[in-house]
Length: 149
Image (cartoon, rainbow, N blue to C red):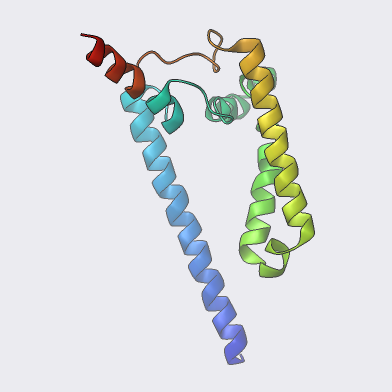
């Protein structure tokens, strides 16, 4: 095997290991924080408002249970996650693809889609309907209550 190909194989193995480690750390974080505070969203924990991805973890869990309608209502973009995952895996392992206009355009498209759905959900459901509910136990409102005393 030529050195250039060996280097590429070595680089791809390092990327794969990094990806597995990142996902493992994220999973541990999500499980730990969820068991302590009920949810893992750092934006919700600090500010008390939902983020554009709020409800995705619960939606994925509903998909795994076969409740596709419930998953859609928890977060309508849950079914785009395999596409987004495949997109980023392809970009992670292909430098050429990660620099392409197609990758950039798809990133802009999915970002705009998430922001659009977030704005709609904030207007239609905030502050009382899960997952777009207001979190009165957030750090920001804990500090506010502490300062008001």
